[in-house]
Amino acid sequence: MNIYVALTLFSLVIIVYWVISDLFTMLFRFTGLPAERARFQVISLLTGCGFTTRESELLLTSKSRRRLTRVTMLFGYVFNITIVSMLINVLLSINLDNMTNLFSVLIPILAAVIIIIFTRVPKVRAWSDRFIERLAGRVTRTKNVNTMLLIDYLGEDSIAQVTLVEVPEPFREKPLAKTGLRAEHDLMVMLIEKPGKKAVPAGAKSVMEAGDKLTVFGNYKTICSVFEAKERFGEEV
Image (cartoon, rainbow, N blue to C red; front, side):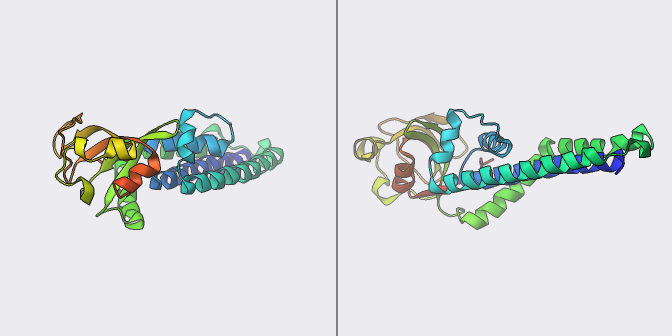
């Protein structure tokens, strides 16, 4: 095998690894994780580097994330072993005498770099995100229901953004002080964002309406249950 073929295979591996990383990132975003946090955790899991942060606790908040985490770790382990074995065989079989010229050797590497850079262009990423979001909306069927996007995880509690398509019956036309969210469910609505307006701090007299986006602090499962919300895929634009 000449060095041109070897570098072509190496570049192909880089592209495949990048695609797999994006695929698992998309799957974690299906479960409601923000894009950047999902991507960081996926890279950590796939590479097996063991680098963890407090954000890794986000992966343990639901059964679906724990299962997906196990699959990602196992896939990354098997994939890495396969790749290392292949690269060793490639390096051992390289025949430098067959190398033609420097330009031909650089072609595969340049192709991989161009593809990766192209996929990072904001407009390309925005288009792919919109496509995936539409697909996710069909798969998760969250178009006409209240949805929730996990923002952060603090100990046993979470900060989440709840988008209200419909206000739950117990809270309709009631100020927050009379909803029982704090006293009965130990949930705190911190911010309310009305359609077309900026988010403002929630007060005792604030009333929830359809179309509102609420930033809520409390137990993750309780938020889903009380607001009758499903996990949302990615960030809404």
